[in-house]
Amino acid sequence: MTQPRPWILFDIGGVLELVEDGIWQEELANRWATRAGLTRAEYDERLAVADLPRIDVEQGTAEAYWSGFARALGFTDVQREEAVQELWDAYCGEANVELIEYARSLRGRAGVAILSNSADGAREEEERRHGFSAVFDPICYSHEIGANKPDPEAYEAALRAMRSAPERVFFIDDRQQQIDGAARVGIRGIVHRDNATTVAAVEEFLTAATGS
Image (cartoon, rainbow, N blue to C red; front, side):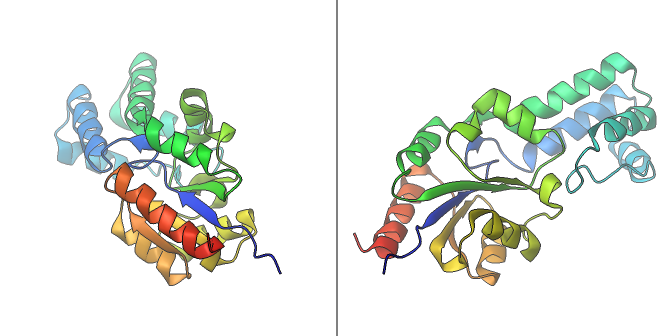
């Protein structure tokens, strides 16, 4: 009996995109605080009490989020649009072309999919910049599925989208906690540090999964 095909499931930021997660967020927050004439503590407090929507787990929230963000900081419409552009430039980074092309080469041997924590608007921005849909299917974003990694619901949503059992999936993420979250639902994976190590781990998984 033929086994179901294996799947390689990719994170985006820090894996398919060359960005330093955690660093760019701080840099932007400090920049926007300075632009608003606030200390960082004042900036954090203004946003904390602004009751902004959960842009990371709710779809269709971008307009309300950025309107509330601008009001909280006293930004003009021009400053708001500058902030939005800065956010997406930092968020999307540069494409990890080598790894994306490797993923493209896997078609026929395995399914290739994406599971990413995200913000409303990420699908459109990343598609415009990197064209992920030409390689990956399905693409699961947290703001569309309503759950962030390492919540088990995020991985379970991806499994449903792939129509796969967890043992047939290999997950790649740049954060250990996300790999640990995957393991709790039975998905093996690797913390991405460099392309060569990740590719070798995928090839090992596929050899074991397919027997060839």
